[in-house]
Length: 166
Image (cartoon, rainbow, N blue to C red; front, side):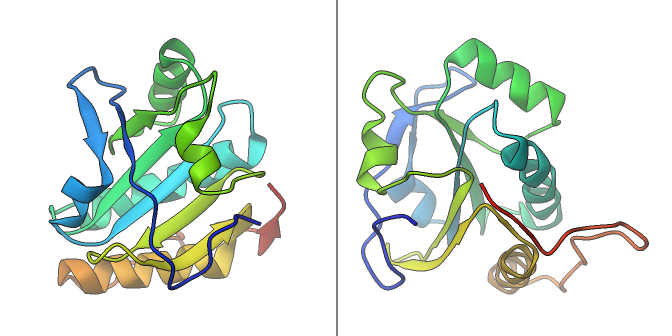
């Protein structure tokens, strides 16, 4: 489990952007609303399973009031390939693959690790690995924050496990 607990202040994220447009900043994203920060490694099968669902949430509520921010623990080339393979359109930041300074600040030992961070910078929800109920809760909170009706994140007939360890 991450070293952070709900209610604690989220460490700043200020990292190079995957798309090469400068830095991605948590404090800047929080000005628009809550942030879902999702840490991953491209080789992680649970990350590969989870990130398309985060993309669904982004596409449903990415109206500028909720930010989904991927934080890659891989180099730029591998991260670009991952984003392309899974059709990710939300911002992705690149943690330093030598020091993992941001991942370490969040106390990570498992990916995916997902943090819902409020506009005031507090961690509201933490999800480690794949947890269907957590993804549904993130979806509900993203809908509420964006002022939209909740759109189901899972498609009818889709077989989705309740849990997968990261």
